Amino acid sequence: MPIIAYSHHEKIDGSGYPRKVGQPEIPIQSRMMTIADIYDALTAQDRPYKKAVPVERALNILELEVKDNHIDNDLFKVFVDARIYDAVCQTEA
Image 1: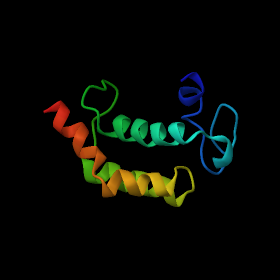
Image 2: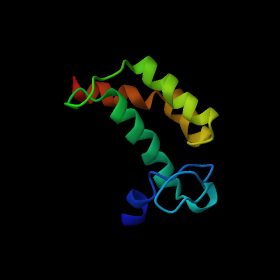
Image 3: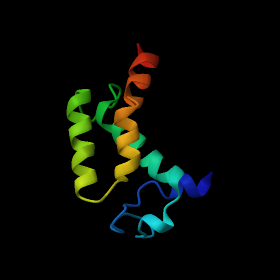
Image 4: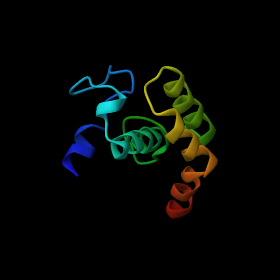
């Protein structure tokens, strides 16, 4: 569990932190957590330092992260195709 959390700021292209490792060294669980973490940071209503963005805008930002080779394309596709983000909205309602 610690390595999953420790690695969730790494990027597929190796430009993340703290270790600056690329996709082969980033556990798949961390790559999943990265997508969830970014989505949550963008859409959370409880952040006093910023306003939440709409779901569509958050997905567009995540898509840019895919294009920049920062997050896993295949996992992002699953996130979108399975509408994982809807599960978050339903539990918060």
